[in-house]
Image (cartoon, rainbow, N blue to C red):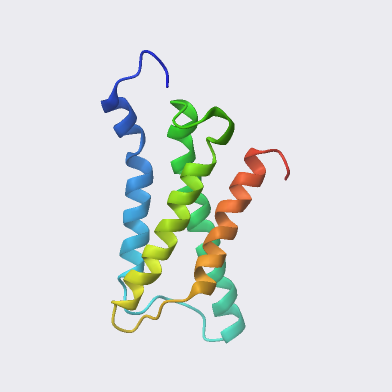
Length: 126
């Protein structure tokens, strides 16, 4: 970690990720989400949304880890990835408790795809 950092600054740097996670929680708490009447368009829209919101979450988690060099230098990307995927599992568990919603491991897979796209971009593969 940087020598001149203080823990308050590190905490503040996580506020965007925490806020975004709250937004995801809010969406998961909705009994019905807007969609399309045609099943294929509804599927594409909702799964693209999963990819997008988790790509943003992973990106927002990655920033403080990289800026403050939290974790081993070689694997600064791993801890935020594990946090984002763990949150995806939590999100599906939360949906299991929400009336009108059902959990799906397939959604966790789409969430992981979103995180992976950011990681591949960051590592220079795409």
